[in-house]
Image 1 (cartoon, rainbow, N blue to C red):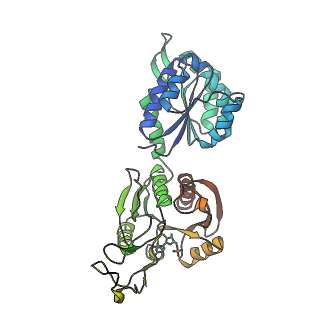
Image 2: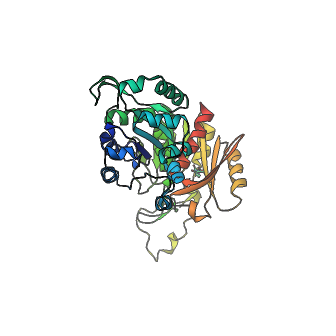
Image 3: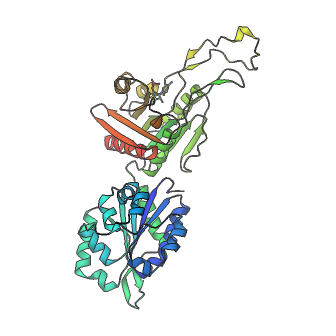
Length: 397
Ligand code: C5P
């Protein structure tokens, strides 16, 4: 499920290879991606919109000026939604349009409005590919960091043999996969804590909190996408992480502490996302405490170790990131924590706002490093996670 949580727009233009787009969609979906299709009018001469709608599971986007389609998901929303845009097959005409920044159709407009990584898999007659105009367009687009996949050499639909065939669907998907493995945290080892901890009072009762683990798991997911080797030390939550993550399940803060110390010996980065219980009962009863056992009602709480502070002061060479969930004076408190715990970065959010607090899919945060502040406006936790990790990467590389 390499592309889990990835939003992919596949642009299909009018070439004979358009029939292979269905296979590309299927392969991306198999890897967990959410796929939306943009078709040009000429693409519809080669493959029906119904085919691509059925394989992708979503309605086709084909018009810039259709009021109903714009109401459902505007072209700007679609452009922002995409993490990856792949145009396959891409005709010489579409390449030329993109080179000139044309926005008269949906495909062109989306390319201009999007910040996604863009890939083009050209497909055209060998002479059209080698023509000077196309070659100049190819060079211009490559300079703009648009990645080209192919074209491949071989027999063409028109009978010619040469360079111009679209690469095979599995090779296109593999190319994009490999490109994403060379991420900004390639080869870095990261230990992340996530979720709540449980401080047992007796075998059936415990002290815990509302943390769902969503932010920590999103950090782990984004770190894998960026090429890191990830240890996720997690309290009890109901999320299943990316299979590339080394998941270490714990219950209590002291178990979490021990595992973190173990994995930090070999980590470059620590990210403390867990809502670690600050206190635990001073004694544990190995038998269920009876209702009328008054002598055991008083829990006599004692403090848990601060894992984040401990890591920051004992693993000096690691880059250490904390999270601060606050309900008041959010930024002042976050900045104080950055200093008090001697962190490299703190990510603060206001959990009094229910739409970005515990157990929801969105977040909005301020990121403080020793010298900078970044505001990441409300977005899905996975996207916030990617942005936070980009800042981490720019500070350690
Ligand atoms: O001081 P406060 O608990 O608000 O700080 C939050 C940050 O500290 C989070 O990154 C959290 O994971 C970390 N923390 C910790 N161990 C504790 C308490 C908090 O690692 N015992």
